[in-house]
Image (cartoon, rainbow, N blue to C red):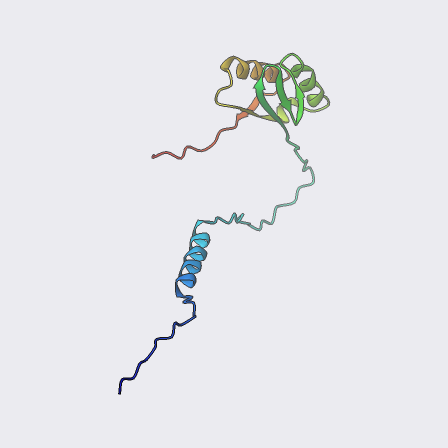
Length: 138
């Protein structure tokens, strides 16, 4: 007597590879994400009867071309920049003003010098040039 056994296919899904992949993705995102934590230091400042607050005003300038310059998100041209700068400086001490100047790396050198001249003519000497950090080898 011959007994025939038929193999029945199993209809189950093996979840082990899926769990492995999800676990690796979770680890990848945990390692690659960055959290900016600003350190805080508690200070107890000394008291003074003659203390004055020193407000520093910052001007942000984005130079794209001679026809397109932004002063604190207000569009102007190179010719109109001195007028807007005079309005921004009006009523403030120029030595307490500082400016951040941004420009594309393809922006002409002459344009950047012209914007710096306009800033200096309005008494703003503290000018910073915005750059991005170099990612290359040190």
